[in-house]
Length: 135
Image 1 (tube, helix red, strand yellow):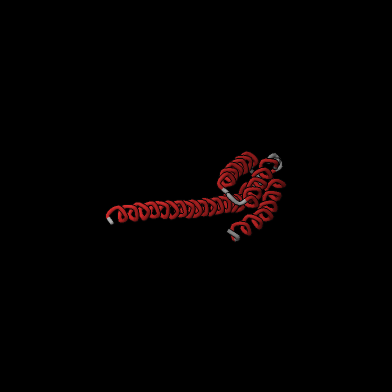
Image 2 (image 1 turned 90 degrees about the horizontal axis):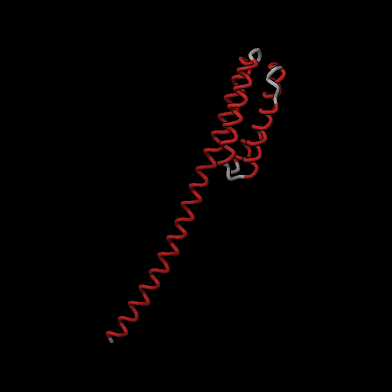
């Protein structure tokens, strides 16, 4: 009888180890999923904050080409950094697209560049916020 008890205990121990491994792996996946969601939310917040801050500063930069060029470049960098963290393809492409559009603007014509930046920001922010809302 003691041999039977030992075998049962051994099998129970093996089952417990397998179950614990399954729960542990599932727990890790859940932690990774939550962590990924947090990173995506942060990418949304960073991207929206960068684009909004630029949009709010555009009226004051319409006659200052050097400062406008710096603001466009700095915002493009922030958007690219947010895009690197975005897990969602649509969000990543929108953030990258907005960054590229800012880099393509000619700050030597600050009024025209500011107008285009405002229109482009409004267009891309619709896509970015829709993508963020869907997460």
